[in-house]
Length: 171
Image (cartoon, rainbow, N blue to C red; front, top):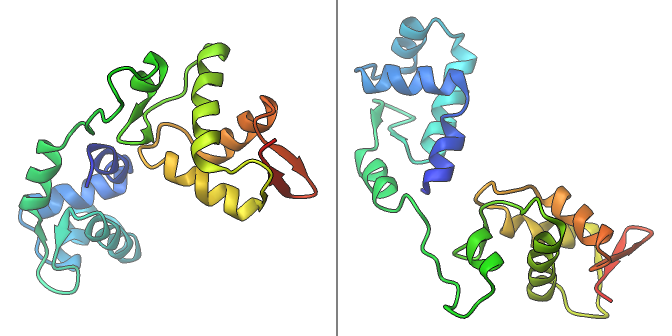
């Protein structure tokens, strides 16, 4: 679990309340519902999402905080900068471990980043359906630095990808 995934999971007020109840000793969905005042359906969904994120164990039985997972997230709070030392400063700034951590506001910097993404994700001359483009771009967005639809739109706007009838191609 990354710090970004942790923050994303706990961004929802209901999940934070559920997590807090478990931290404070609630061991069942019923106890969590009583302590938080949330409906049982919301609690069950929240517990499942917290378990999927690795924050809670025992979603089917006795609930507890997954302390090992939290310790690992604290240790690995920032992805390693795996960019080569001579790599473009824009790439070193906006990419961590091959994942976007943000998009530059300045168009020239954004174009450098988008060109890098296009070169790494799409072969020139090959035709890609929209689903394949979305899947390729989602991998770049794992850290929530942007979303795949925004990347796709920017790639089209900058003419790094062309689109015709739902089929994309790198010129």
